[in-house]
Length: 139
Image (cartoon, rainbow, N blue to C red; front, top):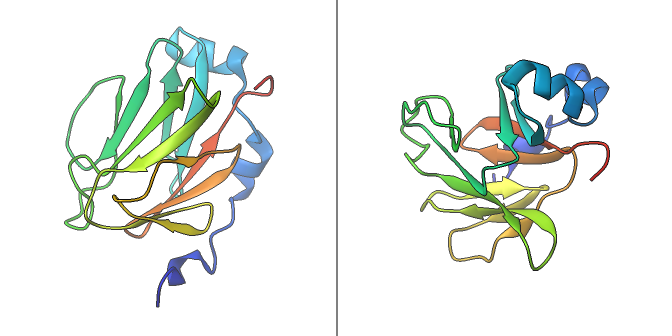
């Protein structure tokens, strides 16, 4: 069924407790302030640094500050989705770059759809991988 993996898609306690990105904590971890953070269902974290305009999510093994490597899985593309700051709308958005659909905020997002706005704790489902998008307290 469409979106069946969303049935139990709720933020785990450690995501809810974090609530939002704490800039001070992220600065200690990466040496720079983070503007957003991605957290997978298994606890893998990715900090979006303030000098990065977009981040690609995919299965490639890359160590770059603008690439978040997801699990190696044939249903996840090398460049599956892009998260970026939309200056005109003053918000973060996600775009599907893959032929495979994704779900954002519990709605399907295909590669032919316009990018969708992300909010604090927005759920993202890529293949069967659950990801949460977090924003700093002052956004």
